Length: 295
Image (cartoon, rainbow, N blue to C red; front, side, top):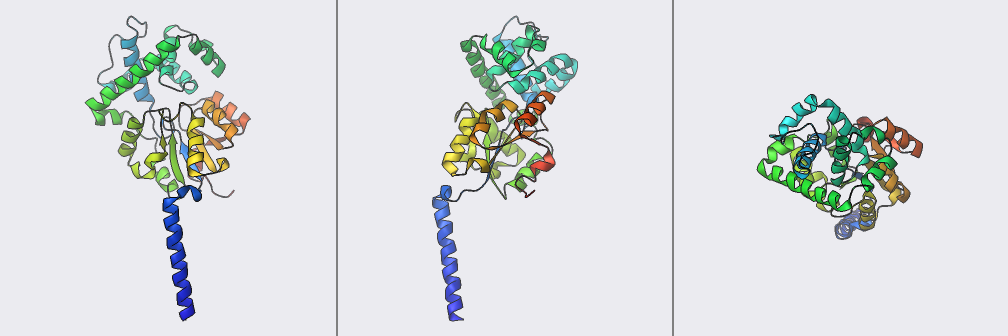
C-alpha cells in the first residue's frame, strides 16, 4: 500500500512537471491546428465589404459611373441597396472569390464601371486586369478603404457589427472544436476588426491572441501558416486550413497542409470544380464539426 501511494505521488509529480513544461514550452507538445480564414468562413462579411467598398470608391473616384449618387448612410441601408441594384451586387459577388486584399475591391468596382466583368472568367483574367491598374492607385485605395472602415467602427461599433453576422452554426461549432484543437485565424483583414467581431460572436476565448494572424503579419495565407508551423511545432499535415477562396488553398497546398474549401460562403461552381480537381475537401457545416474524426 505504501509502495502504491509512493507510485501515485510520483505519477502526480510527473504530471505536474509535464504540465509546467508544457506551459513554458508549448512548442514541444504539438497538437493539431485548425486555421480559419475569417471573412467568408467565420464572418458573413460581404455586406460590410460591399458598403465600405462602394462608399470608399465614391469618394476615391469622383465622377464615377456607378449607380450611386451619394454615400450609403446609414450603412445598414446596404441591404435595401442590394435589392435595388441586384445586377451590381451579383457582379461584385462574381469577382469577389478572385480578390485577396482591400485594394481588390477597387479592381472589382472598376471592372463593374468599365462593363467588363463578363470578360473576367478566370483568376488569370482577374490578375491581368488588376495588373493593368497602377499599383500606387491600388495601394492608395487599400489605405483609404481601411480608414473609412475604422471611421464607421468608431462612430457606431454596434451598428457596424450588425453588418457582419457570423454564419449560422459557426460559433457553436468553433466552440466545440476548441476543445480538441488549437484554433487560429489567418486573414487578410486587420486585427482590430477581427477582435471586435470575435467579441461580438462570443468567441474571444477560443483563439489565443498570438494565433490571430492578420494582414500585418503576412500578406499571404502561406506566410501565416508557415508562422504557425514554426511557432507551434505542428507538422504541416496536422494543420487543417479552411478558406472560402480556392486561390488561397492553391497558395498553401505546397506546404502539405490539409486544405478545405468552405461551402457556406460566396464561392461558385468554378471554385468547387477547381477544388475537386486539386483534391481539396469541400466542407459543409456538418463535416466541419467532424474534422479529425476517424473515417
